[in-house]
Amino acid sequence: MNRHWQTGLMRWAWSFLLALSCPVLVADELKTLKMDSPIQPDSPHSLFVGELLGNAYASLGYRLELESMPLGRSFIEADEGRLDGLRDRGQSIANAYPHLIRVPFPLYDFNLVLLADRRRCGLCELSDMNSLVTLRGFQFQEDYFNAQAVHPPLIKLGDTKAVLDMLTLKRVDAAVLTELIVPPSFYQSSAHWIQYPLDSASIFHYLHAKHAALARRLVSKLEEMELTGEVWQLRQKYGIPPIHIAPSLGPAGKISAISGSWQGYTDTPQATYWRMLRRAFAEQRVEVETRPSNWKRAKQAFAEGRFDMLIGAYAFEIPPGMLRSDVHIDYEYPVVAVGPDAQSLALMLDRGEPGKACQVLGYEFAKWLPANIEVYEASTAQNCLKLLQSQRVDMLVDFSYNLSDEERISLAQREIKEALPLFVAFQNSSRGHLLKKIFEQGFRDLVASGEVASYFPEQLSYRQARLTKSP
Image (tube, rainbow, N blue to C red; front, side, top):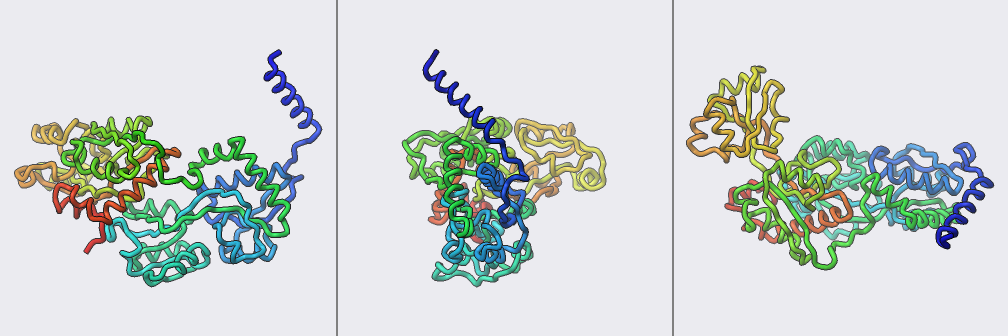
């Protein structure tokens, strides 16, 4: 018998006998620990922590009972022992609450972010702001602002909704919050919200000092789960990136990017977007392989994982589950419907008269048209124009800059969607998270230095990109 196989068989038999002699604890047999409820219980981070701690504690004979309460009160309740601990909090709170023990196993990293309207401040640095609003009671935010020699006037409110309402109503320039408590619905409410990371920290689990022995057992269990791969599996399940991604790609290698073939922006190696990309990764000394393509094929190739990055995509074009840059690289012009006259456009767009429209292959403008419009695709905008001129379609849907001066005069235009930001997309992997981090920092440096302005075809297109604060 193979010795390794024999050893494995003996190990399996011993585990089986041990399992028979140690019945599995059911929920009613587990001891209860009281913890605070998460602020966003359905967020990926909350679900990750819930399953990770739930599994670890269950193996130690405990279950967690969550109690809902205001954030500020939860610290006091835990410090005074009425709660057994806090599920997940920043790394510095033990300094303020001496009876809490930090379990030395980082759960995940998070950012303190500035939220603003990118149309007003471009990439939105803190120095661009004249007024801020934040949430009262977060120690990490308090520590950040106490460390700033100068910062804009700061309003502190009691709940997240009130903070975001002030920002939405334009009563302040920006809001500062931890990224994990901003509900997804906020970003879905507008394509123009940007988040800018001000500071970062790690999140840990805390127990009251009366559970010091349990804290030591728990960290040993979590470290064991790390070694067996269970923690990594849970990170993948909920899309939680690895802890502390260092901003380096290591030895020189290659990274790849694909985009549509757009004149002046991606059609040559020295076009605007490719220059941006290479410069953002310049310090990494990696070779950036770029490929212009049909936009539909470009999106498909990226979705299939054949390229690291997709360049120049609307937010809604990025495949579900992939990463999107927080910074935009440009602002596309408004999308317009173009037809022979304004009256016929109004009949189709406003009054439900059936019609046919043409868009460029791979574009997704149909989502902005009423259901009575049947949409066809052509390989180029000029082919759509030919279909319109031959009356095979009733309108084309595109950007007005693809029309000649003569066509702009002779044809009617109707805006169907405002100008929207364009982004870089990354694969949702450890490599993708790293590329996103490196790109965003490199691109911000490029904008701050003013160098990026020289990459655009002319000053008008640079102003359209809205990369800096509007005058």
